[in-house]
Every structure is written in structure tokens, then in C-alpha cells.
Image 1 (cartoon, rainbow, N blue to C red):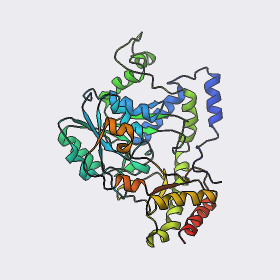
Image 2: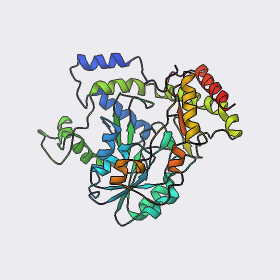
Image 3: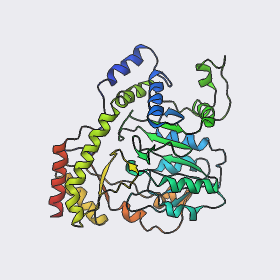
Image 4: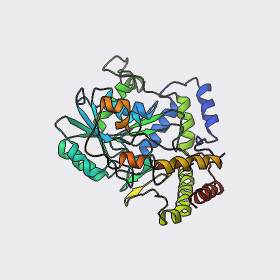
Length: 376
């Protein structure tokens, strides 16, 4: 069976984790947490990176850093996303306002955002699906016009860019995921990217349970105390050690994934040209990270049959998000602005194919052959 996902692993991880244990420093903000933060800062150019226990917590932390968001306020986002995108703001009492997606990239349709802005709107949350950027120029233009914050859900976007700028560094805040299904993993984990230096100290306080302990550890104060509300968003340094081993070989992992992605695309192009399937779109100015490879079947019925056929041929394939506005919590906490032309229809067509570091060219070729046989 060709698995849908295999978590990434680097050989040095065992040595780094052992070092944490031997140094008797396994809690948060140890040496490897700092190494990961510094690597991401250097790679992306963000003012500050703070490793977190998950991308969910990174998004919650971003929401807490925006005190203007409270009960009854509105936050614009796509419905085609993971629940954490909305949860972070629902926890603040805000209302997720869902906007339709573009069928080519599965990202929020930037042309529909401005019409959804009201006097209660406080933020926009673009989700960079599959590591392919939203149209950030237009989104930032709208945000500037209406004085809105922008929180980039770049859970799938590390190593991707938009017009030369790393995803997660364009809005006020960006959020990465290092879940086991992502390109680089620490099991469960994430990171908050902070664009503006003025937000760093407050982020450190909230991340450290509302205390100024980060300044204490840096020797800037002689004791720490409770300053503000907060929670515990620090991952274990052992998790960070597991991640750092992969970051050291990030280019190798990225290149391998891109080779598989390109091989899928070239092999399946004839099926797309024959009108059997749709392939992913990467707009000009976007550099993606091969986070996933998906195809689109004709409809839900065909997709269901396709996934079953692939499984019968020892290939694991999965669908993705159920649109949030159709879920019980989405109906309870949010609302959909405008017409759902593409969100539901396109989500029902999408099937994700195996994609992970270690997937071989022979396996990709086999998967493509199975797909061709299905469509024969």
C-alpha cells in the first residue's frame, strides 16, 4: 500500500533529542527552540518567529495580539479551510464571515472580500491552500483601505513565496504548521511569525502564560511576574530538536517534493487536456512548496469512485476540508457572505494524492498509471 502521508524524518533527530535529555533541558524555549526560531527568521525575513505547540495555537496567539477583536466583531476568511482558522476568533467572540473561493487555486477570492467588509470587520485571514499564495497585493490593499489586520494562515506555506516575499511575512502575523502531515514536522507544532517589532514583546508575554519570563531568561530583568492574560504556547525542546534536524536539510526535502509534484503534473497532463480531470494552478508570482498534489474529478460521485478504485489498487487517497459554513459550528458561529458558487462544488471534486519526502518516482508513476486506467 502506498501511504497517503509519511511524516518527515532526518537522521540527526535522535542525536539532537538525546542532547536535550542529557542536558536536562526538555521544556520550552531551550536551545533547539531558539535554533528553529532563528532559522525561520533568517529564511523568511520576518522580524520575529516564536515556535508554538501547534498552528492552532499560533493563530490563537495572533488573535490575542489584536485586542480590537472582541464579541460581535467580524473576521473575513474562506470557508474552505481547517477549523482552527475560525476557532481562534470564535474563542474571542468574533464572527467568521466566510467568502467564496477561486476555483483555480482554492484560495479566497480576493475580488469578493471588499463587499464583505462592514463596520464590525476587524481582520482578514487569507489561507494559502496547498502552499500556493493568495493574491496578497489586493488583500493588503483592502486591509490598508479599511484599517484591517491581516493574519496569514500559512499552515501549508513554509518555503513558499509571493512575488519574492515568504508566505507568513506579508500580513501583520503569519502562522506555520509543523504537524506530522506537513513538509517539516515536529509531530504537533507550529510557529507565529511577527512582522512588526512593536508586537514582539506582547507576543512573548502572552505566549509565556502572561508573564515577562522571556525577558528574565535574557537577563533583562531580575525577576518575572504576571503582566497580562496569556497561556502556555511553548513546545517541548525535544519536539524542536526533531524539527531542527529537518530544517537543516530543508532545501533537500523541498527539492524532492517538487520533483514528485512535477512528475505528477507531467504524467497527468494528458488526462487534463482530455477534459477528464483538473490539475492544480500556480499563478504567476507564486512559488509553491509542493505541499500537496491534488486532482479534481467531475463531481462528488466520481471522486468517491476514484478514491475507492485507488484504494483497491493499494494507493491511499483522501479528500480534504468540509466547508466550514456547512458544519454545525459554522452555522452557529459564522455566516457566509454572498453566493457559494465554488466552495462546496470544488471541495467535493478534490482528491489528494500521496505526497511526502521519500515518495519515489516509481511510486508516482504507478499512481498515475492507476489514474489513467480508471479514466479509460
